[in-house]
Amino acid sequence: MDVHEYQAKELLASFGVAVPKGAIAFSPDQAVYAATELGGSFWAVKAQIHAGARGKAGGIKLCRTYNEVRDSAKELLGKRLVTHQTGPEGKPVQRVYVETADPFERELYLGFVLDRKAERVRVIASQRGGMEIEQIAAEEPEALIQVVVEPAVGLQQFQAREIAFKLGLNIKQVAAAVKTIMNAYRAFRDCDGTMLEINPLVVTKDDRVLALDAKMSFDDNALFRRPGIADMHDPSQGDPREAQAAEHNLSYIGLEGEIGCIVNGAGLAMATMDMIKHAGGDPANFLDVGGGASPERVATAFRLVLSDRNVKAILVNIFAGINRCDWVAEGVVKAAREVKIDVPLVVRLAGTNVEAGRKILAESGLDLITADTLTEAARKAVEACNAAKNSR
Image (cartoon, rainbow, N blue to C red; front, side, top):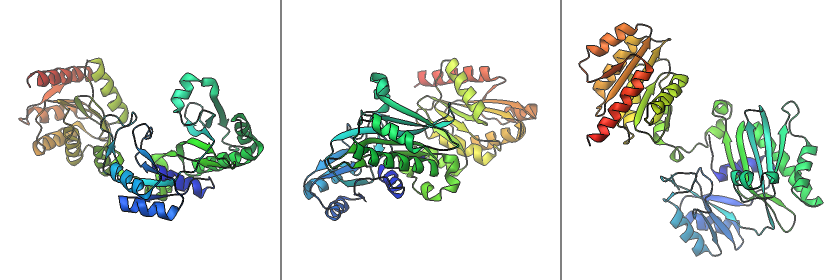
């Protein structure tokens, strides 16, 4: 789960990480009020979306007057901001963050990531702040400072000092940087983070170290013990179909293909998508209906898949182990009658009571394409998709 910049900064500040003063605003007038409350004469108005590279896309405005603050907020609010991380559809801006824009001397990079291969937390830092970490790694890999944290003892002070000195900081700045690094690690660890990126981490003229920007992601499986973080979720930043699927305990991820997939089991869903690619097609989604493929769940799955206008065919691939093929077949038939399906529907059943399930499909009177194997089902789905495209 991702959060907005201002939410990440609130969390970091609660653990002792220094951040610039700022306030959230949902309207131009609120933005002006926030600027007056913050004081000063130079502010940054930042679009709040779950994506980086906002500055390059015009999502961060520097303002010297209240009128500029109002105009910047008015321009950003309600806009769909498109960056190279959002894709062409962009993300809606429903709030802006007004922050004091104090001058600084240096930009650094500091990040924490859960390295699944090493099964450790990896700390990454660089003197090349303000750049994307992928760009730094590609252009100047030697500029990356990396420390792997031993989970039994956690990040140690000497490791933080080593990072600070390698960042080229003076003695006074090192002390501030060590405090920032240690507290940021605590926030990452104690909040079940999977990624924390402070880019840039800036050094001011008076030797302060501030988190000028922050991105955080959290382990979805740990949210049950982090209700405060779970409440920060902003559904407007995700695919509305994914939010709808979550309400029905379905796992859905939208893709860019044309063949909708309805499958039980995450592993089988991945195999189904691979087989569609192997047959020359492109899956439109990942959708796992789980072990209990009831008629209601299957009907919801059909609605989710059909809400994607790119879908030209649907492949239902069920391997009945926990449940039974006849139950699943009844669910498919009932769902197909309840939901208007105007694209070819390919159904492949295997497992417990498969013959009874196939009989139900055959006697349903529905215009279904059946298959015995996954290879055959994928091939028929691709053929049906191509035929549907050619007929339009």
